[in-house]
Image (cartoon, rainbow, N blue to C red; front, side, top):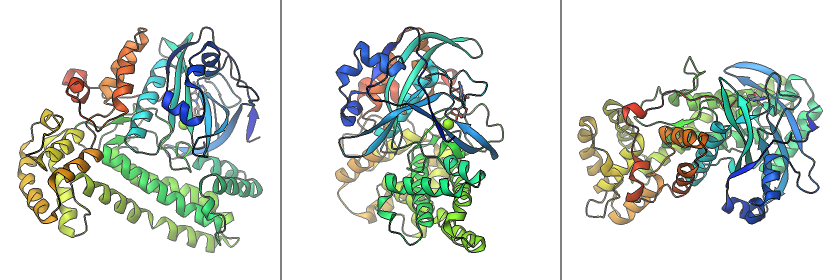
Length: 476
Ligand code: AMP
Ligand code: MG
């Protein structure tokens, strides 16, 4: 079966860490209630919301390039769906809520560390304007989980536009179940792309829409230095939201070869590879959709291939548009503008400059008479950047426009605060000792990442060498 009815497995002593009151409100859930004993019991899986029929679902997926026909919610249970205040249908899922038929050897549980990481990073991404699954709540379970040693257990509540993955399509395609594939196509169009329902070729229209959504998404990741770390096809959503905050991290010094994941030995999911991997994953989606694109397989392949060929252009357009905004330009239209952007990245790499602070420094430089942000001043420009700056300033003069307004726009697209890896690590370590104050401070700070506040300078600084976190781990 594609999904089974599955109750969460209760935990011993649930205790609240944090409720996302703003998101609860958006979902029409009373945040006060969520923090009550009944609410916390629900967030821990010890009680069910009235009328809920929770399920766990199957999916397939290519993991590090290898197809696995039988994956699924091994430690997650869909509690149900709600229609939010904007009329959108949202999934509410518990993660770490016990075993399911897809747990295989796993315990279905989650340690506290991955829960804290997912909470902070997914909410940071949302605040940065990146489509993302959300964090509704985190609770501790009062039970240990055993990985390399005993760690405190926790349950995470995730909200998503849906959990339909590329791997969901691959699941039915691998079984040659075309009827189910057709139902999943119809459902996905209805839920995420209803404007495409009347399309002449709905399967092709869906493919094109997802190509556009993921091109735009990965462009956003690149512009923020976000390294997802586990871009398996089961971790790519048709909705275009970022999902699966396992070994993810934000890059500090700019280096396209950056990899954090402890299991990514070949660097398959390195920062610079993310666009190509997205296209590779979309090719797997295209393959799964082939029988629905055309009964004539040659024709289907031809149509799918043409659609996929649009990916690099769509990615570059989105990425150049975003880079232009970070440079205070309306667009990178001319070849010289594109070279200017690329040369900046080359300079940042040569200087091993902090990717985030460098753009903040540019925003300060764009209007030297302005107040500045303080964040840009946290970084001393290196020699390569100093050499590049005059070229860009000349270009800005030709751009025209009001400097103060330009600076305001640049601040808005280049955050002062990101979920820096060593800070996430600190929040985890303190949380493991039962102190969540730093986690709360970060969650609050990351909700408005563009607004400078000197009292949070320590949250804007890159890691000192001894603080640097070189490896991150899948949230198992
Ligand atoms: P992920 O790395 O989160 O994409 O997980 C890959 C697969 O392993 C998914 O099917 C998960 O549900 C499953 N999985 C990961 N951790 C656990 C666990 N602790 N218990 C059971 N299944 C797990
Ligand atoms: Mg996953």
